[in-house]
Image (spheres, one colour):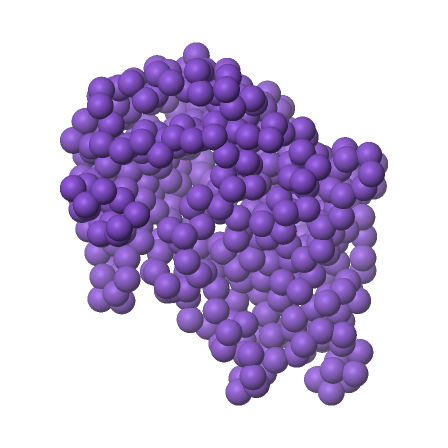
Length: 459
């Protein structure tokens, strides 16, 4: 098939270097990523996806798949190959029974929330509404609703997938169950998801967002008290303790500009009036510098972090590790590591895991073991290329130092730049990795889909 033949069949847009719209289409969220595909296939339907996969395979082109383009490693764009851009495939359909939602592969969580929340329903997403559904959910999906409803991948009912040989297959508990297991945590290794079916859950009109902000010099004390509070908190309470620096921005009190802080961002997944009472202790760890706590609709809650991470502006390097515990020495190590951060634009968070996430059996999905009580994410953000080395080195240094407190696994949506020979194997653990490898070889024996958290070893 020639490019002209592909154009004749294609309903979407095919962009090559120099075409109007090409430069805009190739930009992804992380400003460090600057790659130029030979062709960008902006698909409008499933047939376009099939045509694109077949063309790339026949011409031996590297494939990058873009949903929201939000993955920090920049997997959504490749150099010299074909970017298959699903962002035009963003429809969301809610059937009358309100028990599930059908989501096209290019939708963002903002698209999903806009369609479901008017019916008082939601499915667990992430923390930033501009994130693509596919990239987040296929690797796990840790969001505000996890305590009651689990990970995004736990709520997948079925998936329609275009395979490496151009077939459209369905994966569910009754159809291709091996593939269905692999897609819930195993990432984009097995094909391109054209459609998802997710479970929906009732949500109240307003949720409580509890967000006191304490000075970082009190971080050891505050993080200890937060840990003890979260140990006894009900499933409705989900949250993270986040280190950051207050920017010089009129949205914040001027006397706080430049202060390093620890924010206890917490959501109560239930009636807001109950949540205000349940989360009140978090606002009483001494006098907070600021307090952004409020009652708000879930759809608004999902957008609170959007402005902090604008597309393409900043340079980013994020890594994560699951913590085996949050003992006092762990807390002290985290605080000491954060004190050395070279950029005041950086964020770092301790995420409480548990609740419904922890009740899913380790072998039920490719996400694997759920016993970790916490996750640490180190989210270096800076603006200037000369600062790349210092910020990346800082993340690696702190990450390496935290391994004595880690389970040895990590969350692959925060994979650095995807480097490291054993990154993926270590993240899953040997049992899950070997099972995923067998399924990868079945559905993608040539490793056509390798711009991802790639599961591959030569025979």
